[in-house]
Length: 339
Image 1 (tube, rainbow, N blue to C red):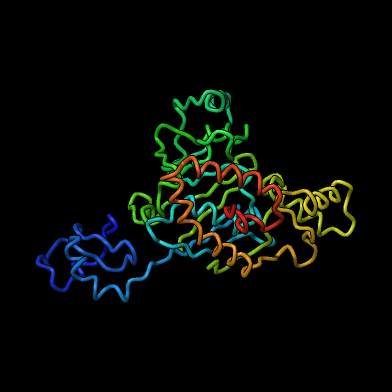
Image 2: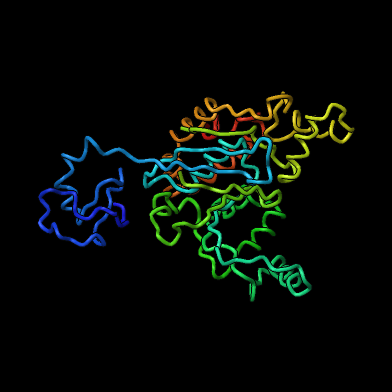
């Protein structure tokens, strides 16, 4: 059973010997999350009747990329993710990489924003503090920005993804002695969403600490999406807006022509057809869903290797680091681990 309290008022076993058990002692069925039991004995006794109706539930999650900054069109993806105990935030990271057309070029984290955090003015004292945090990891006196960070396990692997100088420097700024940290593959989705500490808090997925792509999550197959996937290393949301402007103008400058050529031929997740006309609104839901299905088929295998055969898992990740450089747009996930 999932170690989380349910809102049901009594045990779901009709023959429970303790029908008046307080709700605080009840735990949900880890698979469907819809029935509650006061003990494993009660769950076992009720299983025959419950089994035909026991189906894993899903969380419907919407992620908006720089909402209010990337516009016309905005870029968002709405995903249905399993609440199975083995589906972790690292699996969600891989899912988001595919859904948004990223290429897993660099590191990431998920973070719960501290609602009491206030950005300080850029005076001399704050600049000195910023420098100490950036260069030495000294957070003394610095305000806490995040309550929780779920970090990239690949940063622990020598030679793996995430060892970019800018990424490492910005990662130090996101750390804080008052921020709880766990590696993303060690946190199942259901444990996070059932934890009352994070209820009502804003979760943000940050990918590429250099370009600093912020995806803000709202808890609601890839079921929906808006906007063409965003180019890797385009220069954050401002660079993406400039690239779209280059495609919209009737008399592009030399710099704008160079931007378009780069996106069509050299970007890691390039699109040879560019963003002309209505392509800027393009989101191929069917293709995205196929890739997610392919990927979800192998996630249990990846979880198994990451926990029981770490050396093999590391080798697979390094082979993927080489293979992904040869993949075209939307390629990530199609041949990821089939080696």
